[in-house]
Image (cartoon, rainbow, N blue to C red; front, side, top):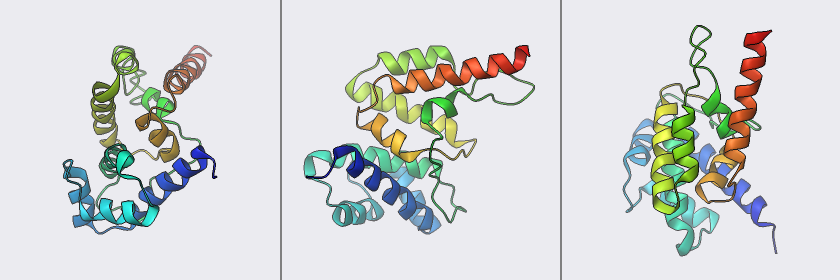
Length: 169
């Protein structure tokens, strides 16, 4: 039986690659898709063998990756090691040392559960999408699937500490 985390990683990278290679219309459909899905999502479900009881989570993940993938992009947004918490904590600019995502919002995201957590996470992704960051899609998939409970906060505060060290040096 394959390791569950390997299956998550394989699916996450595959979906991100498919969205990167998709035409702009398919990307737009994936960004707007409701719970009914979109053709690009259903092709991935069939190709990756996603079970019916996991479809809703993978649909949410697919929509989030689509939000991060610009229409002009021709490659995956996947960047190994560029964890979600780190990306959320990166400064808006050198002049403005505030993180992209505030500590208050992070606290609400971490405290939320189930559907509320997914909605809060999707709002965070929508906010990030303006900056078009590369991101570790495996880490995002684990966040969507509820497999990284505290990783998000650890990565966020590790990045904030690094930023403060550089600013105080």
